[in-house]
Image 1 (tube, rainbow, N blue to C red):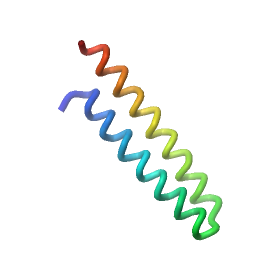
Image 2: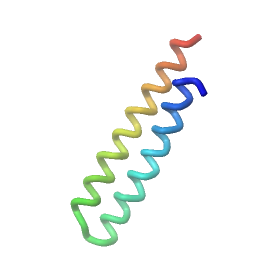
Image 3: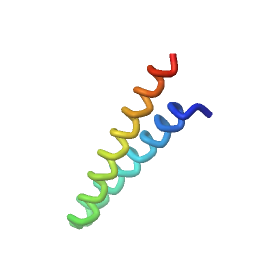
Image 4: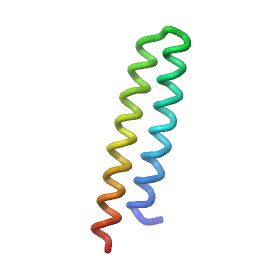
Length: 59
């Protein structure tokens, strides 16, 4: 698997996982879990963007 594809896949995974944690934190009224989900979602977006840049540079 190309590094760019791996970064895109992992970024998407972390975005989804972060969104689930964020929603779970809101539903359970747990601000720590909600904040953790938000930060993981942002990290996933960053990793996804890195994968997109790598994909462009590979060409």
